[in-house]
Length: 267
Image 1: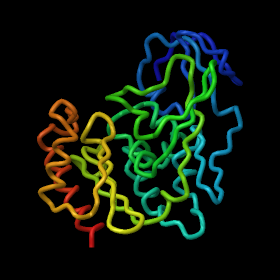
Image 2 (image 1 turned 180 degrees about the vertical axis):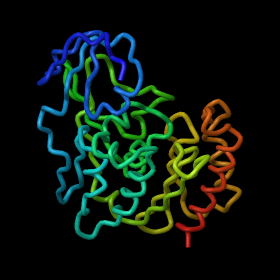
Image 3 (image 1 turned 90 degrees about the vertical axis):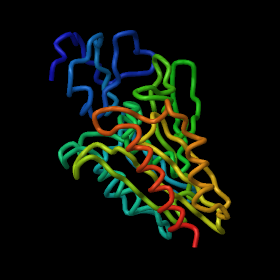
């Protein structure tokens, strides 16, 4: 950890406390992992007492400070089918169990890295992000929260309070596909297919692209139509390019996984 420029720690912050040079602190697994030039104060969100998970008949509210371990161990609502998908996304982290017990769901979204599995999970399950700031609250679809590599919609002084997953999204069928350069590597492509009733289904593409891309299908499309739809939705500049995978390979994985998901969901 190399944060020697930090001069103050605010244990019980309020929204009005934020000023330039501040950083909201939750798990800190990324914040403490490398130098953070320009950060002068840390404001600890974990002291605010937000319940990690609040489940009800209408859905599941996940606090931004909920740890990956807490989410992974959630038993699920009666009759829901999303439990395996939640566990698969939690296990998609390039992290040990020790990190699972510190890293937070909100932190993964706010880092806004293409490979963030909580980004994929909350987008695929129709999540809605509650954002709070000095000027009030606003709601943003989880699929729209990340707008680019390490870029999100938060404005200075705002924090992500929670992500709400509606009950309807926790039912139905969910198909997960993921690939990386090695067994425990960062995701190069992470796709989730969802279907609730009838033949209609939705495809959420992450990791291979700089921000989530979602496509909806009637169920009547064939392999060629799905392939064309994905290529039309993802222009060349949107494919992610880093040491974890070249754009051409990520595109190849994405198209292959999209077809596998189509075949599994459209019977």
